[in-house]
Structures are given as C-alpha cells and as structure tokens.
Amino acid sequence: MSQVERGMSQVDDLTAGVQEILIDEATLQGRIRELGAEIAEDYRGRDLLLIGVLKGAVFFMADLMRQLDIPCEVDFMAISSYGAGIDSSGVVRILKDLDVSIEDRNVLVVEDIVDSGLTLSYLLRNLEARRPTSLEVCALLTKPERRENDVPCRYIGFEIPNRFVIGYGLDFAERYRNLPYIGVLREELVAQAEA
Ligand code: IMP
Image 1 (cartoon, rainbow, N blue to C red):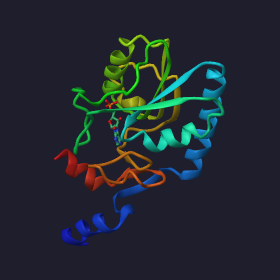
Image 2 (image 1 turned 120 degrees about the vertical axis):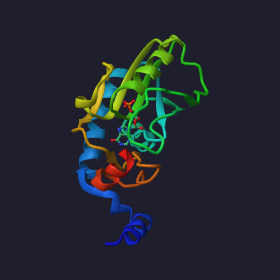
Image 3 (image 1 turned 180 degrees about the vertical axis):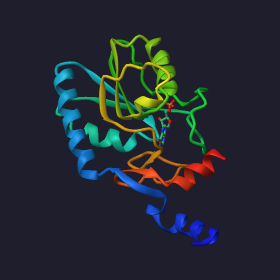
Image 4 (image 1 turned 90 degrees about the vertical axis):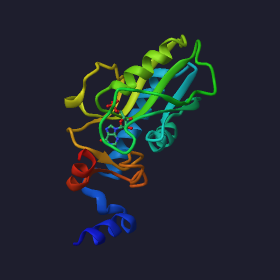
C-alpha cells in the first residue's frame, strides 16, 4: 500500500488504525455490569456524584451509569492531556471545571485510563481541596507498568499491558473514539507519533 493509499484508508476506514482487538465489546460490557453492581452496593443510601473526565470517559460513564440501580448525579471536567502525541507531559490544565460544588458530597471520579497517573494525581489533589465527604476513582483501564504516581483507584475495569490503545472513548489524535471495543493502535502510527 502506498503512503497516499494508507493516508486515505485512515480517513475512510475506521479500523485501519487497529493492530488488534484487546478487549471486545461483550467483555467490556460484562465487566462494566460487574463494576456497576459493586459501586451500587458500596454507595447505596448515600448521595453519589459521578465526575467524568472528558472526553475519553464519556462512553464508559454512559454505560456505567446505566448499570447503577441507585440515584446518582453526574458532572464533567475537561483537563489537558496528551494533545496529538502519546506521552503525558505531567503539566495539567483545567479546560472545563465542574458546574457544581463537591463540598460534603460522595464523589466518584470516572476515568478512561490511568497511564503514568500524573493526570489523575493532579486531579485528585485539586478535588480533595474542595472538601468532598469521600473521593474515589473508577478507571476502566490501567497500565500498571507505566505507573509513576501511586494513585489510589478503588475500582478498576482491566489491567492492560503497556501498549497505546484506542476505541470506546480513547483517541489517537482525536480519532477512533467511536470504535465499540478497545484496540491496540497500529505500530507504524505509534512510531509516527513518537517521531
Ligand atoms: P497519565 O497522566 O499518563 O495517567 O495519562 C492519562 C490520560 O492520557 C488519559 O486520561 C488518556 O486521555 C491519555 N492516555 C493514556 N494512555 C492512553 C492510551 O493508551 N490511549 C489513549 N489515551 C491514553
């Protein structure tokens, strides 16, 4: 395939960037049902506010919420992440803050993936300062090999190897979020991003 054809296929074909499927749709949804049941039991009888981290956590948040058979509220924050590359800078900026106060509330942060942990550790320090009653994290994916900051994740969907993944909300240069599964990004695209 020529460079031009490969470029076109990335525009036309959503699956062109996928090296392999790491977690299929049924496995994802099965684990999210289990997480939902666990979280509902833990928070039954308490007021629960879910905080989603945009944009990656949107799909996970939507599916997880529907598995909770207890009342809950939802809010979103946007923080700067990798941009077009694939490595965390450690410099985190709040692009959109919460609409509500979290003082005296039970807060559960819903994250797509914890990689180095730099983003989450910044976020937790920031939220802790707002005096919630409790503050916990539910991350769909973690890459334990990459962890630089020891961030406490109470609920974890899957531990995955140190590979760049896309789909189900996760992007590479803003693309591929709409894949219904978690896939590994094709190696030549990882190389391009690192160049
Ligand atoms: P950390 O600060 O290194 O933990 O990076 C956290 C953020 O980087 C996540 O919320 C994602 O937005 C992004 N990220 C980390 N690893 C991946 C990946 O494999 N695919 C897509 N995005 C990722």
